[in-house]
Image 1 (cartoon, helix red, strand yellow):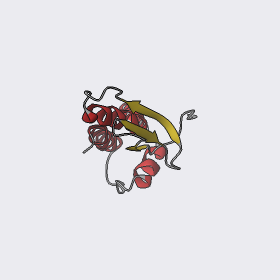
Image 2 (cartoon, rainbow, N blue to C red):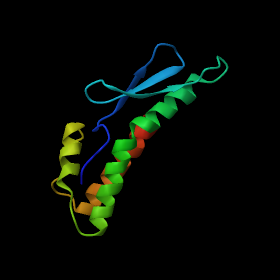
Image 3 (cartoon, rainbow, N blue to C red):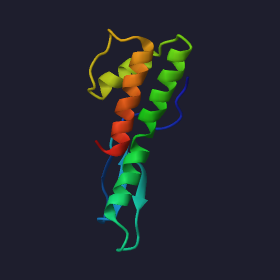
Length: 113
């Protein structure tokens, strides 16, 4: 399957003001930014939005892995993805267990944990 979006991992960093967070790719290329223009808007909301956006490639891969596991297939790209993120090696897991772990990691990233 060809990926047309910026490859994972994505991350965030503070933008040009305290209410702006930039979502960046692995080569620090800008993907998009979250903005809360009003000073009364909480910075935490802008950061939470950025974290959710930055987790989207991880969430996509987790869902693809789960879908593949349900069809008794295994996507070797998911294992490479885990190693790229430094999340370890899971050769002892079944495809469904592997997908479950991917899902937990992606959710944690989306929550900023």
